[in-house]
Length: 308
Ligand SMILES: [Zn+2]
Image 1 (cartoon, helix red, strand yellow):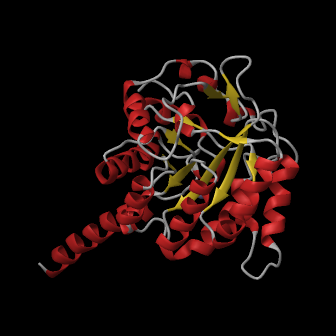
Image 2 (spheres, helix red, strand yellow):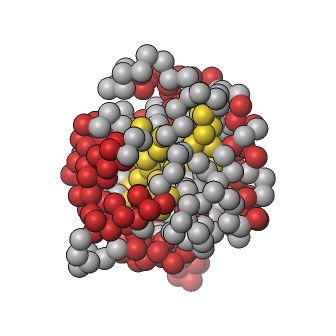
C-alpha cells in the first residue's frame, strides 16, 4: 500500500517536472551562457561579418519557405495585420511586401521597394515589466516594431508580461517552451515545444504567433517542418548583437552592441537582440545610429508567412 502510493506520487512528480521544470527559470544567466556557446553553433559566421550565405547546409535544407511557400498570405495573419493597424504604426494597411531569404534577411518582393530595412527582434522573454516597457517606449519613439520571441515557460510564470507586449502592439513570436536545442529531438517533442507556445500565447492574447525562432538557432529539419505545419515562418537571424555574450561587469556594453551590429549591418539585416538590461540601455542609441545610416525598421507584419 505504502509502496504503491509512493510510486503514484513519484510518477505524478515526474510528469509535473517534465512539463514545468525542464529549463529552470532561475537559470537566466546560464541560459544566456548556453546561448553564447551554442546559439552560434548553427550560425557560425553570424557573429562576425555579413551572413549572406547559409552556414550549415543541414540547417538550411528545406528552408525554402523564405522564397517559395510564403508567397501566399494567410487569413490568420490578415486578421493580425488589421488588429495591429489600430496601433501607432501610421501605414494605412500592412501589405505583405517583404519575405525572408535563405539567410533570413528581409528582402522586398518587388523591385523598387525599400531595400534598406532591418528587422528588430528580442529573444528569451518575457522577463520584466520595467525592461519591456522601456524597450517598447524606445521602439515607439522610433516608430519601430520588433518581434518578441518568447519562451512558454516564462509566459506561464508571467502571462501579464506577454499581455503587456501584446497590448503595447508589438508582435509576439514563438521561441519554444523550454529554450532547448530542438534539432536532435523527436518530432513529438518538437511539436510539444512549439505547439504549447502557440496555445499559451493564443490563450493569453487572443492571437497566435506567425513567427518561430528556434532556440540556439538550431531547429533542424523537424523544427522547420513543425513550424510550417503551424503556419509559422521559421527564422534564425543574420546579424547578432552578441548581447548574450556580455557580462554585467563588462564596461561600455552600449558601444560594443553598436559596434557588433554596425559591423555586420547590411540591407535586410535580421537583428538578434535579447531582453537584457544592457541591450535596453543601448537601444535608443542603436536605433538612432541605424536611422543615421539610412535604415528603416521593417514592420514584421509586412513579411510573408507560410499558409497554415
Ligand atoms: Zn534564445
